[in-house]
Image (cartoon, rainbow, N blue to C red; front, side, top):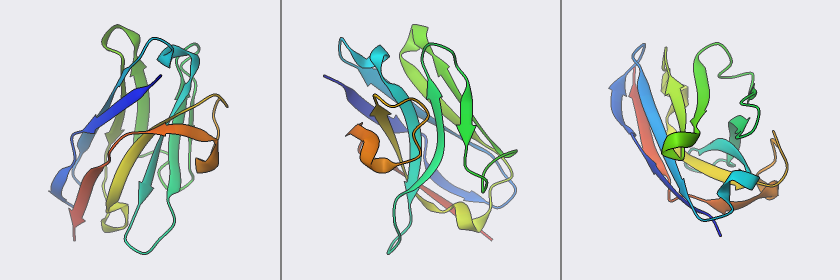
Length: 123
């Protein structure tokens, strides 16, 4: 029903910026809320931010609030994560997911995932 493809990851220095994109496809994708998660080696996949296609209201984890911005462009079927003031602790594989539970912070509520994109921040 929903296919998700992330892009935009890379190797950057601390205190720089990076933009991630997640392109959604499928006839029912707009029924889902969208979220960004990240997972570092040996750690649990953790919530980063979420947004709803209908109202556009964002929700952020405390660790990224004030530095990251999530947005959705319905014309391009794309959700973005604008990351600024990047820190080495932001290093992880970043995944976008789709959920029927709006603004969910739990990865178990997300039924569809992209393949992930690597973000590495050097100190």
